[in-house]
Length: 114
Image 1 (cartoon, one colour):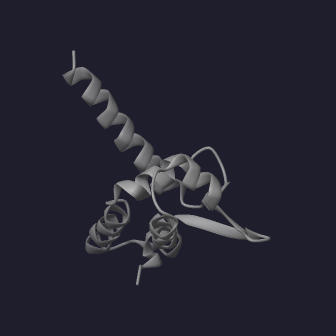
Image 2 (image 1 turned 30 degrees about the vertical axis):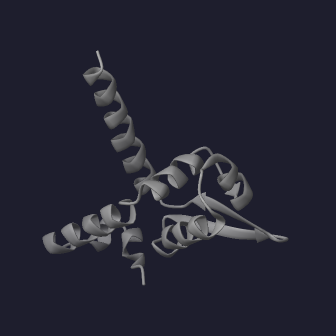
């Protein structure tokens, strides 16, 4: 079961150990490349599962598993419209962290290839 604790505000985290625990939880949730791809795809707005599958090369069951993990961790929100489920980012801190780390790695990678 995923801990929804990464949604806590900074006011709720007072003990140094809590900070490290929450940071470890964020990194655990973001540790799968598939989840990073999903977060990246949702950075520009809400998308349904069909759209995500058209942009990310994976199976529907695998996509569902990762979406569920991100949802349970409080990174994503979802809503149903008919038979489609639409996902959106609700934890901007996680999205910003993902964006920052991936951008820096891409920049560093480009520097190494010169």
